[in-house]
Image 1 (tube, one colour):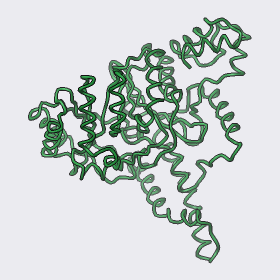
Image 2: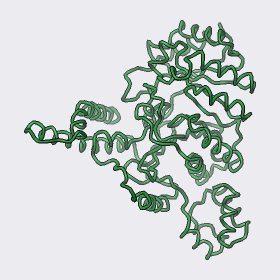
Image 3: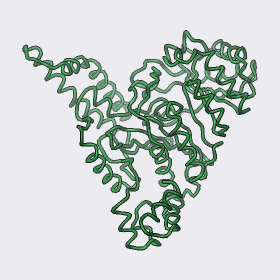
Amino acid sequence: MTLSELQEMAEGMGEKKFRGKQIHDYIRQQGILNVDDMKTLPKDFREVLKAQTIPTTLSLTGPTAGTLTSTDGTIKRSYLLPTGHTIESVLMPYKSHHTACISSQVGCAQGCVFCATGQQGFGRQLGAGEIVEQVALFDIMLKRKGVKNGVGNIVFMGMGEPLSNFKNVMSAVSILNKDFGIGSRRITISTVGITDKIRRLADTNSQVGLAVSLHSSSDDKRTPLMPVNGRYGGVSGLLSAVKYYQDKTNRRVTFEWAAIAGENDSANTARELGRTLRENGVRAKLCHVNVIPLNPTRGYGGKKAGVGRVDEFCNVLREEFGIEATRRTRRGIDIEAGCGQLSDVKRIMDVIGGGGYTKPKVGEEKEIKKREEVRGRESLGGGKVRSPVEVMSRKLRKVRKGYKRVLELEGVKERGGKLTRTQHEKIKTKKDVERIIEELEEEIRGVNGGS
């Protein structure tokens, strides 16, 4: 809730307006969520707050929720929503600040083949409050650890396409500006290239940064990687929108480039990119190409480009076209927190069975939400920190349980028993499930040193 909303809430509960400011300061400045620890509030008011409010709707307790910490210090949180879906957020520590990478949707409808979120499909839009909560919970965690400045920068590069949730994302940006003191110039919105929304963003005169996931400068190569390319006029249509954004705002645009070995990592590919940008009127001085070696996902077989190839790619853009380009450091790979690796674990469980999530029946939504509110009060922004091996082992147990069910159905079919269409479809997933089990076992062996 914003400061004004907290003040209105306090007045609605029969208290003075300043009580809302006190609650706001406890949460934002001290990282306190437990109402009992808000000692300057009257005891009777604290009891009312405990009975009528919850600290967060994002739960860190549940079969697909929790916190992981990478060897490089990156933190990933998987939050369980009242609907049973999971969203993931990442906190990256740097010497001078902390950057939060947050989600704007459950899943994603854009279908980028190298992205785990795109591979799972679209679930639903996140509300502005759910978006802001991801930042708030990281900010609270940091302040509890003595980091006074809390979250410094925000990138909308988690799950989902931010510009497809334009209204809620921009509402969240406004709240982060006003309530958290995080300026728009420290917030970056990433997009696969929703051209009309890029123009709309330019027309708002917002100071947020814009990052465009490009990855290829030709339609014949970009469309297979990013099916959305054909829906928005191809590369030329996208760059026309980028040019409009540059002309309207005079702000720099970052192009994201996942470097895939043997696909888009050569010096000649860099030259093609440089020429394409120039031919479409995109100003080199207002460009920055951010190149990151591809992060692994289970649904895509491409490999990361080598450091030497990436550096040569960047050098060509800088020296031959005057375009700033940098090799981006991969972070959080050991906990699947890297760019393109975030996903909704429950969707895997939906496909193979094994007890992830059951769609609520009509009339059950309120009861489910109530249970999740209790979980929210219990977690208070905390959560158990699990090692990568623990998380993968939990996944493996669930997948094996689902695989056992597939084998049982296969046996029924072989004996001539009747099966529903859904059961027939589940049998067809057998090879995919076997592959997932094999990959998880291999990952666990790798983390354990091959034992």
